[in-house]
Image (cartoon, rainbow, N blue to C red):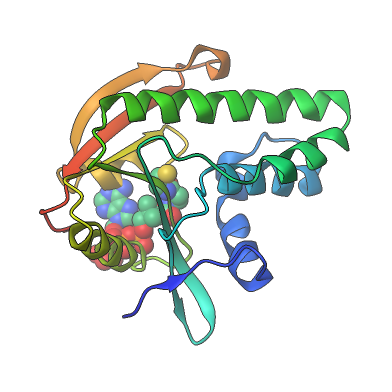
Amino acid sequence: MTLGKFDFNNPKHLNPIIDRVVELWSPPTDDMVFRRLYVEAIIRQNAAGNDMQFQLSENGEIRSIAFASRLGEHTPWYGWWQEKFNSLPEEYQKMLSLSRSYLSLMDEKTYSYMDKDDVKLSLFVSVKSGWGKPVLEGAMDFFRSRGFKNLYLWTDCECNVDWYVSRGYELVEEGTYEPFSYDEPYKTYIFKKPCKETVQ
Ligand SMILES: CC(C)(COP(=O)(O)OP(=O)(O)OC[C@H]1O[C@@H](n2cnc3c(N)ncnc32)[C@H](O)[C@@H]1OP(=O)(O)O)[C@@H](O)C(=O)NCCC(=O)NCCS
């Protein structure tokens, strides 16, 4: 299987990923247009605009993505974000700002563990079960070929945390994000895996 590059200008790339995560990662309002925008902002914030925005497709349909960033890399989509933000009512602006602050905080926490020859998995989504592993395997081959030592990532209770646990990722830090802790603690996790190991 050959990895391709994810293209933000291609709705056949972006829309299926939004469809996959919108129920998981957006606030439960009735406004689906806002919910889709909210998760699109998450996807774009996790894209560093580098050579590590991988996707796998089957018969022209996107199946999975894996985005990564080098130490200190940040999203180039700030202009996009600001424009969308300015067009929203105050209530939605608050939600978008909270999300942005949370993602930035977790990114910086994760970077604080990394050396410059480590890499961060910043987004990992499979639209169809069975396609997560091969896209990450392909990404790992790329990381090894570039001499990266360790893969770091952060995740939380709205994600498939057990996927990493069951594959032997090392838990580096476990935390609680208070602003999102309503009825229950909102758990966050930072994991690590040497790039020389296989995905399993
Ligand atoms: C995490 C994710 C990318 C994994 O992709 P995937 O396609 O489900 O995983 P794989 O390619 O490894 O293949 C699926 C296999 O893993 C198993 N699997 C999926 N989630 C699992 C879990 N939490 N624990 C153990 N096994 C799991 C499936 O049952 C399946 O097994 P099978 O081959 O025996 O049928 C996918 O669950 C996903 O997109 N989740 C939503 C977004 C997310 O949470 N992303 C990651 C954190 S930010």
